[in-house]
Length: 124
Image (cartoon, rainbow, N blue to C red):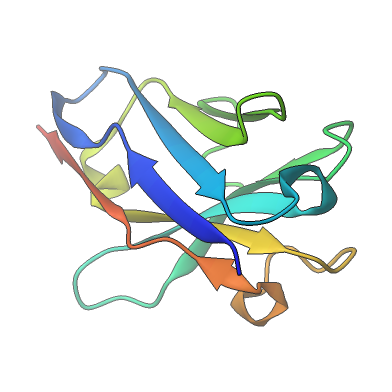
């Protein structure tokens, strides 16, 4: 059983930056692809970014491409999401997720474990 705990959310002005962290425990972190999803009030959960188990491949949603960067540190069992040039429409609860499968990272049903989420609010 893998436990995921997100941190780093908060309130930031438009144009600002935040770095989210997701610490994993209880499993072999390096065997999982890791992703970030987000869910805004009244909207469905949406894919943000993913990184393969090897760290060699990353995938970004078009809405965050060029602004957000996902990375992982297997020595620390942690995945990060660096968010720059934040916009009010980035406001959401951000969740990290772990997948033991290969590919299809944009679909929430590919994931085995989820964190509880961290709130990100971007003011205009």
